[in-house]
Length: 82
Image (tube, rainbow, N blue to C red; front, side, top):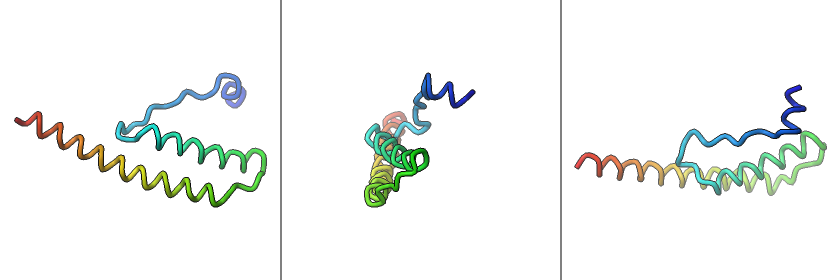
């Protein structure tokens, strides 16, 4: 029943718990997820080069976003302490 509901209605997009994650990273994660889904559902061999490249890009951009998020939080704290 749950799978039927998901197929008909679809899943609601959850907002990231951490606001520092950019939309660009979320799009890359979705692309990577679709590649994995194709392998699971249709049994197509995944394009390993693209899958690995996406994984590396996600890690790299998450690291960048996390640093930016921490810097923004530090600036806010500095402003509020004055």
